[in-house]
Length: 380
Figure 1 (tube, rainbow, N blue to C red):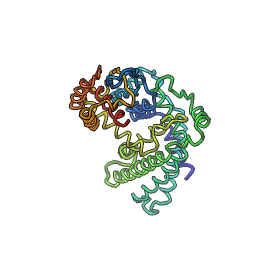
Figure 2 (cartoon, rainbow, N blue to C red; figure 1 turned 45 degrees about the vertical axis):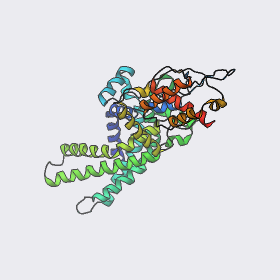
Figure 3 (cartoon, rainbow, N blue to C red; figure 1 turned 135 degrees about the vertical axis):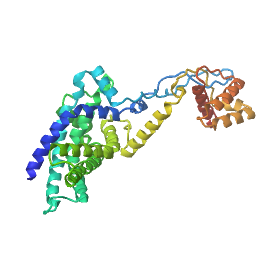
Figure 4 (cartoon, rainbow, N blue to C red; figure 1 turned 30 degrees about the vertical axis):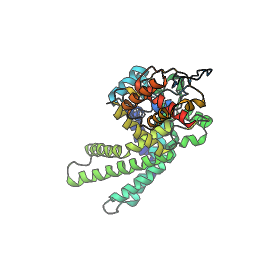
């Protein structure tokens, strides 16, 4: 009976995985929306001509300082239909099955293991008279089977996520794995064998949630339908229980699934800090991105505008040329919160005119540059 459960579970999972692969691809692309900010976080600083200009002393050569440009605004998030249409338009109809070889391997390893183990535990822990198992035992069996299955199938899961997400990257940044075997081989060669289990703790947690909620709720709902006489045991009962169990599993596991996808897909460059230091860091950044995108929808766009500011920067002795009153005003402005750009801009630009500052560009960007430069001068 044990071997039969593994075989039946493996075949059913492979068929289901291949049929739903396009939907899973769209899900991964949607989960990675908003990650562009992290890609730019490691980009080199761009030269922007800007500076705070105090009138230099005689003989002081004007200089130009460079600060990194602000990250571009995140692209608007799209729904599943729009994501699917965009994939077909940009990558072709065949792209909806990108990474299907990894999906097959993942189902053979992960789903075969978890469903086979669950079947063994189910028969072992069921009541010998009724053939039913208590809900607590179902959940426990699902947690155990899901955790072991996820550990076994994690390498294929990492390869699948990367192959599905590759098309969203610029051509020069794509990994271009030819197959799941090529993906696993290159990960071992370029990132080490441990990269095959990147995000494994998240995979295990997600699998435990999915298996416990999906298989346990499937059995529970099926038993309730049969006990109440709503339907007889047959295809209709199985389909109804499957839909209900799938909904429960999706709701329960989606937050962990988003974090797992992002951690598995992150590109680690030698010598540089990874985009995420761990699951908690990924979760916090994902929440911040969501809040930021929601807030930017009502913003007037000033946060993402760029301005070019050109002016000389004086030496460390510049602050000694300021009168006590002017320096006090500079200190007051430097302490202002950057979230109040209108008031800061008015006072700083007025002070700038008194000090001979010549600035051109957006007021919000100007005041932020002025405030940063003033703080640097005061520290000196």
